[in-house]
Image 1 (tube, rainbow, N blue to C red):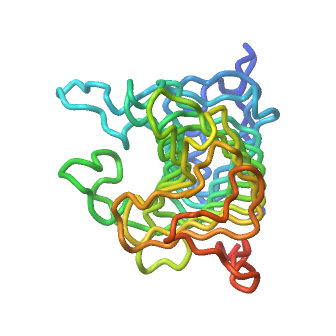
Image 2 (cartoon, rainbow, N blue to C red; image 1 turned 120 degrees about the vertical axis):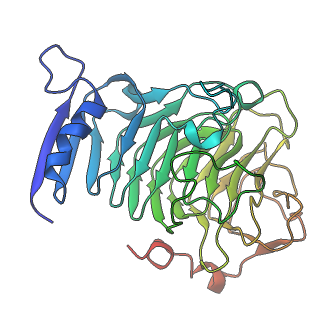
Length: 315
């Protein structure tokens, strides 16, 4: 695809567009083409929905180009019920072939014990790519859709894709910073995290956090793969976990990564599930351990060699 339309968003008075949603509305006339939306530094406080394929967000400076909103799951809606997890995203990607570079995606609602789950991004689509981006939240920062096949309680998936067909997606997060505490990377997509910093924020509760909560479908070979990442934190020593299975058949592999001292020796929690696959290979640092929970598989070199970006994502 070589026909590219470029659009510019800035908070300067002479800007073509000052709001990202206005730029996305304008982009609809170019459906079927690649659209590059260049976003100048600034704080863009708006609910953003991307529903068109082949959209690319290009920022100049991730730390100062911030897409933010502050909805939380405990918010009361006009009809009297709570907002729920899946109506909280600051940015909702419901499209394929989306790409973002040098952008911060943030939900600033606050800690989960106060406001509930609060998504910085709801990423639903195939071949989604995030490079040099920052994701900042507390509980449930990144949702890597699709939803699980069935909710645990009626109404648990209330939101824009509650009744939509579940379509498996593949996501790449490269050179990114991802911050949160409870299940702050979760969902059913296949996602590859390459050279990312995964930062667990401190909180009042115990444990302090769980990085990943995959819900990989039984029919899908790969879930989450973290390669050459850094797991950092301001939490106390041995107070958090690398992950837990949101659903049976969850899959997560962490390889060649630096694990900080905040991670417990057992590393992972089973969340009362019985069928899942958690594995490690070649990790190092104070939080790397030979005393992992018995359900954690330590891969051989030959087994780890399978988990390349090309094999996992196919692109």
